[in-house]
Length: 344
Image (cartoon, rainbow, N blue to C red):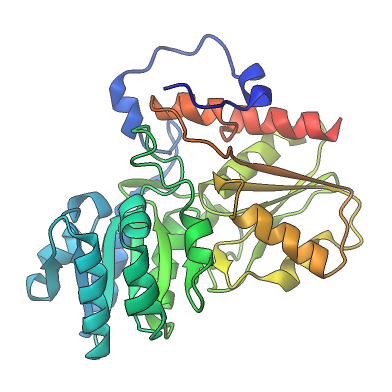
């Protein structure tokens, strides 16, 4: 497969890296030696469900691969295996919510959005039902090609009225988001990082996830990176790297995509003469980048410069995940090089 490639990213791809095996197609997003937590979503849901007997778990044949197997082991009478039938998964979750339960429905993001979109729209969102849809493999977190890469899920889900959308950065975000989305009245779509999930935000003094709020994780005079999901982790790494070149990089983390914290974005950009880069693990079409651009335009705020560091509007290649992150410009090394190029 030869999908269009970002020329700038390709030109700066680090050379002489070791040849990767096919296992790297499903590699962890954690760097070597980075602190991780195993299955933070499953563990957080098990803990919460001990105090919330109305919480139930459903999946479409993917309990192990969304970390919901931990919930199934702890509460077998509250777990429902729906088989490979995502429309049924969402319809059943809606029915359970009508009976007063709080369903957590899990699958892969491509299946939960592309296959079940109409059921989410009509059965769940139109009636504002209390269903929590938690979907693994968001964006470019697998190397198995377009069939598994949910690079347009935010664009699809942002169009559904009343749907809250969460894109957590790390294990801490997930652990703190689970009880908050359960307490929120109404439907939620959360992008889910599973398996060995990095821990980075607990190194930020005083950080706590708050549904609907963006957080300034660090300040810097030259560049403001507005980011979500795993790209916040990358932005923090790039900020550390560029500090060695006396380039100050601020990072504004937006874990809630909808409703977007427009006030925090405007405050971070207005009266600050610095380049604004929106970094996201999603297509540049219809995601956080366009939401931020719309916010700035409507509030009549003009940054010194504006760039999108997202995935291209293309069907992406299959291959080793580290290679693809380099190719499409969202790895630590290539993202740092892109930002320095934009500054020049």
